[in-house]
Length: 259
Image (cartoon, rainbow, N blue to C red; front, side):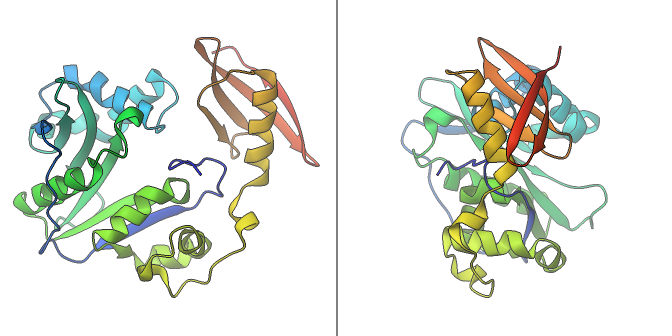
């Protein structure tokens, strides 16, 4: 199963670390280093990493998200947005020590953690998270939260390893999501959540629409199915194609949109 598995039923997950003491320390592999955001040239670098990690399917989607999350506070990113630099000088991973305007000022947020696909499983995620949590502490935050989702189940397991736990209100609102995560990870922090049957992890509509897209585009790349809007996007023929769809009785009818 992919570490960013869109076929899973989607539930928003919000985790909290009660303090920023005793943060686990992990060193980067030899030859890798950290750097911070250095100006607007790093916007495309950030988007490229997030897109490679399947957070976005198109550059324009990345631009929209960057502006939505960081656009009003770009001047703060020099102390908050972190990149991992590979021995060849390429920035290959990122995370941000950020905040949410609506939350308490003492609460920092671990945001937008991503590693380029070809650099995953090289021991970068744990040092990056450790560095970002330490940065939050140095910025004066006392508590840390992180937003994720069931479709990013591997990342959720990693956050739990760092001492995060379910936020109480979110544990109620997304109880089934936590049951899914317990099924997928068997993490001791989630032992109170009853596991679900394996087949019940998957969103049948998403699976069927994805299968329809694969039949239409034999060599397609990444895809995204937005059931709320009955819209699907897929990388195919060197471009991102967008479809509206009708899903009824297990059958999918696709109609291509003009982007």
